[in-house]
Image 1 (cartoon, rainbow over the protein chains, first blue to last red):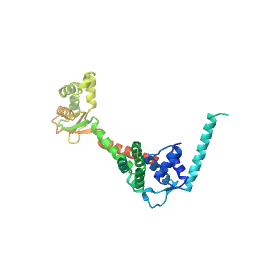
Image 2: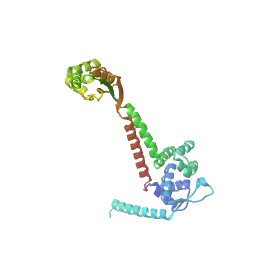
Image 3: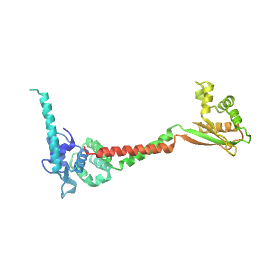
Image 4: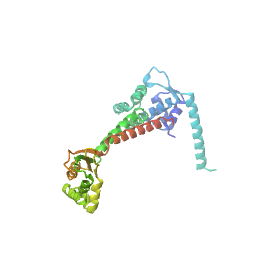
Length: 96
Length: 209
């Protein structure tokens, strides 16, 4: 589970964050350090698709992003799919 | 590492830099930049360029440049052309005389034509090859016939065409032009392939995942 877009949405599901805060949060909860190019590539795609949006900030160089309703819904669908995969794999690895 | 990482931001498309450039620079300042981040920024910039509509134009120009280079490197075939005016009415007879086997063998030896092939092919086939590369047009209303001969060496093509024409009558000046490869066609193909590939890549990269 290392899709940068999903990791980023999962990070923003907790609250608004700027780039560096997202990078640190993802490292903390997933143990994956996204490089700056990968992180901003994902931010660009997610903003284009309307899943995240920037928030006005006094520091325009460290602009926070917010998960939109569409982004929350997308993350929900992705997590449901992932849960099914995890449950299936787990039950197949450890048959009753 | 940070100054190099900052420099790599310049590889991103201008429009992208206008929107995210300062944010990415702040992230590079805040994060403890690692050597792997340099590669990450480079591939990130490359991927972002692949979504830029200017990319197909760049690829089309690259295709044009490659086609131009390829056209220069490919061995050329030259077509030498000259004309002769024959005042005698029986053109068919003089052309037959000029193109009979022994006359052509004489030209092959005199000009050293097909020296590589002659080591492994019988003389009849060499003469046949010469025949394939030689063309004499029917005379026009003014009695002028055109003599064409094609060869990979421009000077040999011109000398052989002159010699062939001289066996018919007094030849005019000889000119030679490249008949293969066709530079313009190759360049159009290179430009087209580059442009279409670029458009396909950009459309694929911009399609939502």
